[in-house]
Image 1: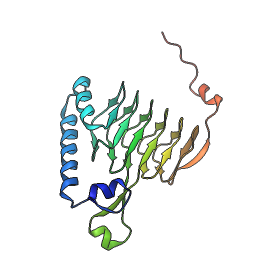
Image 2 (image 1 turned 90 degrees about the horizontal axis):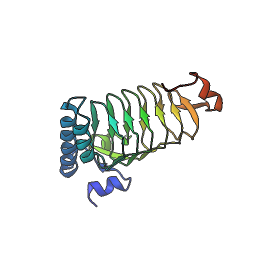
Image 3 (image 1 turned 120 degrees about the horizontal axis):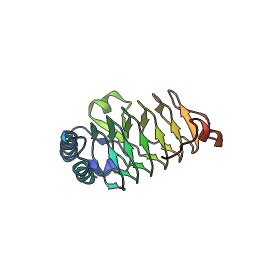
Image 4 (image 1 turned 180 degrees about the vertical axis):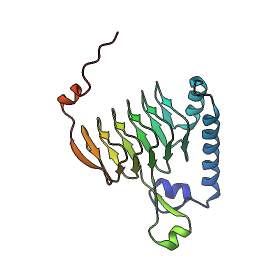
Length: 198
């Protein structure tokens, strides 16, 4: 098996010294660099580059710079995806975002899990575990989501949380490690009052 095949099978693989994987990371890092150099108002130019980066991208996608990912093609984003400044996606495994996902500044989604054994770790070995984020999810500022995690539809993840395990749908979850605080209820629609357009 190639190192890429090992990675995709969820096995230990050489994430640091394999020439083919290093070339892929360099290519997508260069695309991210080009993306990050565009004027913030050049949304058309940004979209053109994001279409080269993401494996699949929905409509009405906004990604504020800076943005970084490892492979790009392992990340898919749905419709009405919004990522604020300094989002990092370490996508050795699949990272899937549903529709209407909102990500606050300084968030990290990392599928990479380093070997616990020092000898394996020093040899550059890692495991990549997928991340799935459902529809209508809000990720607060400074959140870290680790590999192997699924976040359910309509969930809200509080600022500064470290998500180490699955979060069910329709809840507010916070903390380090992130835990369910409570369910989201109809009363939450009243928290900020009613919105009247115009």
